Image 1 (cartoon, helix red, strand yellow):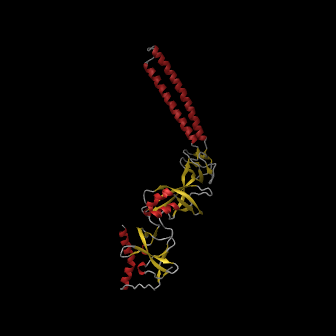
Image 2: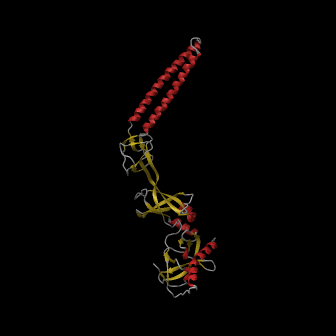
Image 3: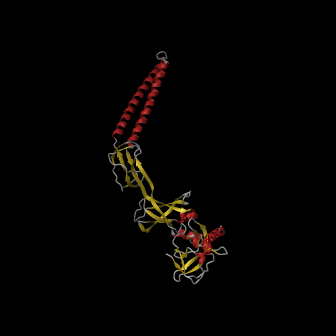
Length: 374
């Protein structure tokens, strides 16, 4: 694998030189004393997940657009946007008059059904006793008829009971209560408006803990287990000096077809000295222990650099030119090629803050003075 990557790098890095030779018709003479202009880049924190910053946005762990299960006119809304609510707190109430009438009617029908059942049971018991003592006094068909009437009356009672329960449920549905401790963030209707069943009325967020989702390249997913074990932290743009500890809650199982990245969801508790609100932007990073562990696993910290910055020798080793800021001279540094990426190559062997040449690597020699192009 390494030899194959090295050969690819060699071909790609030699391409500009080959084009130059074809255009000029002869090999350019590389002179050590000539001050050559180069393009360069400074190595920054672009290492694997344990040390690389990943942007994202805060979201609530739970959120709900609350709605009534029945229609009606909004009678009361005792909360405002920004109010904190507890589980079971009243968010809104429908005018209960129509549902109270429905409940009263259902109860009345139940009382009537119970009375009818008692009468039917009494009639059946009477004819059954007569038939038992004197079968000729009443017919068998009359006994069967009274029994059927008794059974029908009993069924009517059960139906009336169900109607009462349904009316009581509808009455309870005129109350809209918070399903969890949270924050009211939006009201979709105002008091005295008519609403339909399942129409959004109030939006509530559970901000007791916060989630933060980042996108991790597939080439770095092997390090996620380390961050799972050792943890990460998030810095929000609004509070740049505060590091909020976080843990990996969930790792996506499928990469994006366009970016080839996996969603990784972090979760954190609310800090004591400030409050994180859903929608706040920030950036996540593995903590120091995770960074050290990842760096140890790969031998040293890896960086993603342009493919034009690397070149190889006859032994198929991979190098870059590192610039000495004091003398403006370049020196050859061997690096280890980890993988090719969509925009360059992931290598180890460099340190944060160093400057490397990113173009014309095959036209430089050891100790040559250079001038960085803007």
